[in-house]
Length: 595
Image 1 (cartoon, one colour):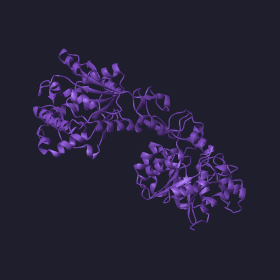
Image 2 (cartoon, one colour; image 1 turned 45 degrees about the horizontal axis):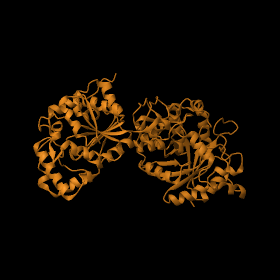
Image 3 (cartoon, rainbow, N blue to C red; image 1 turned 120 degrees about the vertical axis):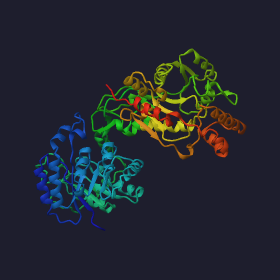
Image 4 (cartoon, one colour; image 1 turned 120 degrees about the horizontal axis):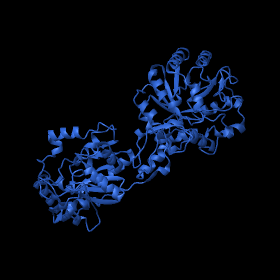
């Protein structure tokens, strides 16, 4: 068996004095061992915890500036060879980025693996020649698999899983040697590391690592200090340099190392008390969804949802029911189930095809065809036909599918104002926006977009490409209100999308790629006589074959009938082909003044 790689964890026994670290490096340089490395723990109190955390004051004392860390890392590289870093926050990421050429590996504690700041910072760096050590204490096997998948995407040179949590001193029952065989079974290709924090005053502290090696660990991590008597922090489990490992294990102590529980109560408590949980980066508004970009990760004494729990709420289509102040954890009570409403915009004014909403498609007015497809949307609480408050549009009240569809009349020109009015009156939190000139709008695409909208915590979700007239758009009602707050009157809100796609710095905009089977190059919107002819023939075929007008059936008919599919292909969407309109929308919907 090859001797295990020994990582000497220098931790915080230096007490904030860099001279202590340099003396410790000098002593460690005399250790005769073939595979030796030293690991440092650069931390910044402002990026590691909130001021209310019990150790925040200590973190301030332990802080060393970037220049000091640079000198220490260079000294370690020269005297020891291999240098490692603990990465707890974005400050450590920056230290690593600056000195990457001198560092062989980095470690992430179990309480850090959900930290998006740390993950995104590492993702921007080249880790192909680095060892990435992940402590997985406190997580079940299924969760560890997710962690491995997530961090494998960073494409490090080697991924190592570590057992061992930071209890000082660790009880024999919590050394968790029993996990090693379980991890070896579940992650047969993975390299394992073991770290213990057993009482260094007792001989067994030097025997536990040997048991871990016997159980297959290729990496060992052990705390080291100059003097336990003189160190203020991290001395309980730290070996002094002259101390050596020995064998004389007592059977009773060895037995205690194999706890029957995969996660001990102490381990659960430690992870719960030190876990970095998401806190709001800035104020979150009532009616908003929460995305990764809305969050920071901090240790705090306040209670709040973990990222996993937060995602669980939003995947169940919950929304914030209260505002959240800046740098505040998010409680479960802040969420409630969102009311999702499909709002179909319709007016009888149409320049190219007069009163097109009332024109029949196989005997049914086109607006009703659209509403009937909207009834196929899953997970939607209500459908609203939203028109103007002008007398000429009042007749649309007669086309609400026998009252199954709500009817709303609002601003004749400002469509966003009209939508917000419907949301306020009917209690809608999330809008599925449909225009009435889309008789075959797709329930499949709508379900796909709703799932992405909630899981990503977006303000607006739309598609990158798809058959014109088949896809809806998803908006948070609060985001629509914010447009009006910022611009007053939305002069171009007929083209509502532009207020979001042109302002990704203000709104959380998600443009998604549809699955290939939901994408074609067909034109399925009603604006010209040719469009009406296509829909009439399309519905005739669907009715004859007894098929619902969902997207797969629609594509099936058009894929089989090339002449019908190209009947209106020469027609183009004005807002995508008229350069003057495109320029006007680009300029007119850009929100510059947010005061």
